[in-house]
Length: 500
Ligand code: FUL
Image 1: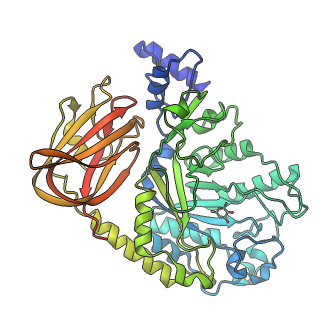
Image 2: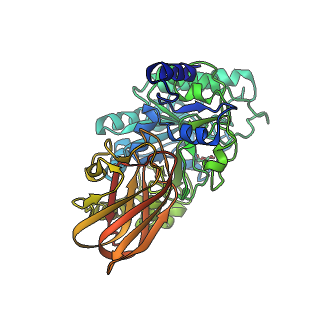
C-alpha cells in the first residue's frame, strides 16, 4: 500500500512514524488513543481537495427537460421537442455568478430523466433531437466555453440514475455510462469537478442499477486527474442537508468506511473499491468519539448544496420565492463559515437565462459580503502569545503561512491588541489545513474595564470558521484554544462588522 511506503520512508528519514503526510491513514490494532489522535491531526487534503476548499463559492446550474415541464424530477418519457430555450446565453450565467464571487460552476449535463444537454453519441435522447438551434446546439460546450473565457472552474453533474436508458438495470448500462462520462471528460477541455448524485431509483424497466463506481473513478483520475469527485465520490462529501446549513462542528477528517478509500483518495489506481458509506447526516461525524474505533481516517470535506429557489429547476411560479440577499448572507455564514464549500444552485429559465430576480438577489448579497469583509479590524493588531511561534503570520493576509506553537502544546492563548477601539460582530478564524485540522475547542473574550468577558466560542475551525455575535466595542481580545489534537495553527484571523 502507498501509505505503508510513506511510513517506511518516514521511519528511514526521521526515525519516527508519521513523518510523511497523506490524506489517508490506517489505524493499527495496537494504536493507542493518543496515536489515533496524532494520526488524525496529520491527515491533510490532496492538492485537488485543497484547491476546491479554497474556492469557497461554487454554483450549480440545474437546467434541462424539467425547465420546460415545470417538474423537479422527470420521467424519462419527455419528448425532446419540448426543449427549446429561446435566448440561451451561458456567458450570462457564468458572468452572473462570477460577479458574485463564485469560482467554479457545475452544469447538470444529464438529470435523472436521462435527457443529455450535449450531443452525445450514446443516445438520441439529447439536444440533438430538440428544435433548439435545429438540433445543433450543445449546452455543455456553451458553459465550458464561458468558463474558459471568464476564468471560472468548470464541473459536470451526470446523474447515475437514468429513467430513459433502455438498458438501465443491466451491465450494459455501466458501459453506456462510461461512454457518456468519457465524452464529457474528453470533448470540453479541463473539468474541475464531477458530481454524482446519490438518488438511485428505477429505470424504464422497473429495474435498479448496481453502479460500477470503481470504473468511473479510475476513468476520471486518468482523464482529468485534477477534478474532485463529489458526493458519490471520494473527494468531497455531502454535508447532509439541502437547507444551506452545515455543522457547527465540522471535521474534514472522518473515519473511512472502507479501507480502500485511501487508494482512490490519493489518486493511486490500486484497489478501487470504494463508495462513501454510513450516515452523513449526524451532527458529529469526526470527533474523538467517532474516530476512536475507526479502521482508517480520510480527508473528506463537506459541500453544502442549496438552491436560491425552492426547487432545483426554474419554475416561473417560484419567481417570488427567490431567496433574499439576507437569507443568502445567512447561508454564507452557515456554509463557508462552517468549514464547508457552498454549492449554490441558480437555475436558468426557459429562455436559457438567469432571471433578473435571481441576479438582483445575488448582487445585493455580494455587496453586503464585500462591505462586511472589506475591513479587518485585527489587521494591524499587536499579537502576543506566551507559547506561540511566528505570531505575525496570523494577520499577514497570506493563507499559506501560520501562527503555531511547539508540537507538544495543544493549548494556547493568543491576545490581539488594537490601537483604537473597534465595533465588530463577526470573528473569522482559519486553520492551516495543509498541516491538518486540529482545533477542538476555543473561546473568545474581549477586555472590558480590565476584565475578560466571553463573546463567542466554538469547537472546530478547519479551513474557515465565521462566528456571529451581538456587536461589541473593544480594543483587546483573546482567543483561548483550549483543546487541539496537536499544536494548533491559525493561518488568518479577523474581526469584522456585518451591518445587515
Ligand atoms: C438530488 C436530486 O434528486 C435533485 O433533483 C437535485 O439534482 C439535487 C442536487 O440532488 O439528489
